[in-house]
Picture 1 (spheres, rainbow, N blue to C red):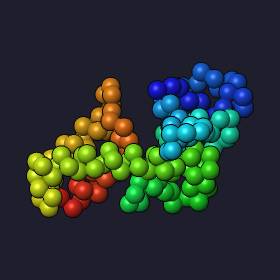
Picture 2 (picture 1 turned 45 degrees about the horizontal axis):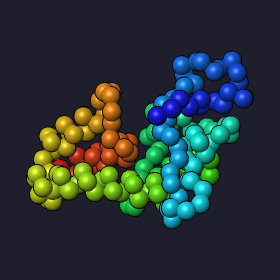
Picture 3 (picture 1 turned 60 degrees about the vertical axis):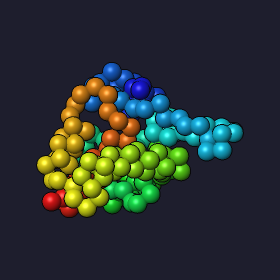
Picture 4 (picture 1 turned 90 degrees about the vertical axis):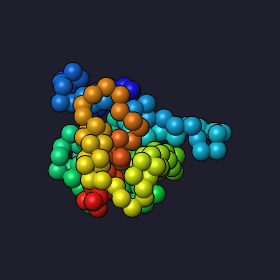
Length: 157
C-alpha cells in the first residue's frame, strides 16, 4: 500500500498533507501478462500527475459504478469511464482476471457451505458487513466482492 494524492502534488503543493487529498492506494503495478516486458501500471501509478474528476470518497461517484461479468469496471458517467479506462487503467486484463478469480474463491466457499441455489440472506449480509467493516487487512478487490454480495443479497432466500 502507498499514499496517493487525489490532486497531484505538482498541481497544488498546498494540498500535499491535506487529509481530504490523501488516499490509500495499492502498489499500482502488475507483472505483464506474458511475464515479459514492462509491467502493467494502474491506479495512481498509471494516473501520475493527471487530474481526475472521479473521487472514490464521493458516494455519488461510487453509486455510478458497476461491474460486468468478467470483472470489467463500468461507470454510468462517461467522463468517469474515460478516466477508469484511460487514466487509471482499471480494466486491463490482469486486473479483470484477478477480480474474477477472487470472486470465484468466495463463490466456491459459499457453494460448499450452502449450495449453489440456496444462499441464506443472513449469511450473505454477515459476509458483506465483514467486508465493509473498517478493520485492518481486507481481501484483494473487496469493492468488487461487496458489489457482488449486494446483488447476491437481493437474490438470497
